[in-house]
Length: 154
Figure 1 (spheres, rainbow, N blue to C red):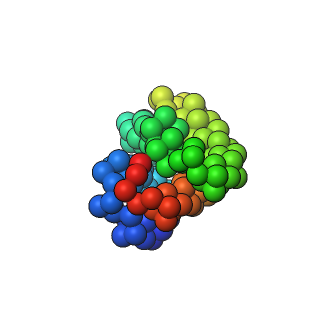
Figure 2: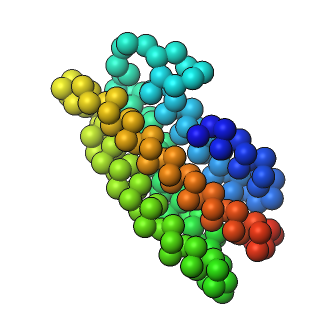
């Protein structure tokens, strides 16, 4: 996921401040996710994360997700462009499905979870990671479509 983000930033970075900020927020979420999940380059400790770390991650994850729905998607889809509308109709169901997973994760871990809930954290992080990977790919298709049709808009 981090490699895909780097490619997105290289391809579209600097063309649009809103997209740059959104991709920077994605990077923040990804780094936090990798730390929680113990993915490279972060060593996985056998300890469970503390409540503050989980709460901060959930907050940033919700901010990123909300920015997509309430700010970015309308900017990325030109309603006058039939191809953009078709692409949006194709990718929005997948984005919405990942949003449900994000919201469920936040409901479970956004506040101080009880200890028995943390027992399934690894499985929940795995499911969240798959959903985020798919979401980022779909979002990148929207950004790429915008860049190929009208690089100065959004």
